[in-house]
Length: 143
Image (cartoon, rainbow, N blue to C red; front, side, top):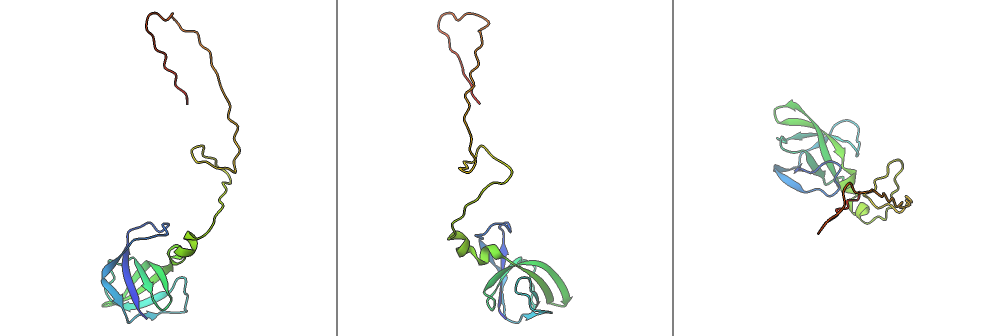
């Protein structure tokens, strides 16, 4: 099984990640530990993966977060991986038509055609404390 290791600097919630190859790059002698689980496999590798937090397993054609590393003996490591669904299905996500509705919060700064608002005009009249004389300016501030 071939595993290519990367350093991922993007947040896990970001779908389109920028990946950097680690100094290790690729391991060809990896083994699955325990029951096969494509979503969160446990893998045994003989390598130093200290700077890797992300990997690609070509046999599964999937990208994974390295969630945990356990030293077994010498350079033998057990890696607990977690499937990165956002990156694995990036093209599907990017080519999807989406309708998003807000369920409980409305932000007036974000246009949302599903939330109907009625503009209300508010006019306040105030008498000036003194008369305007000569050249005068009035500043009006709305909010």
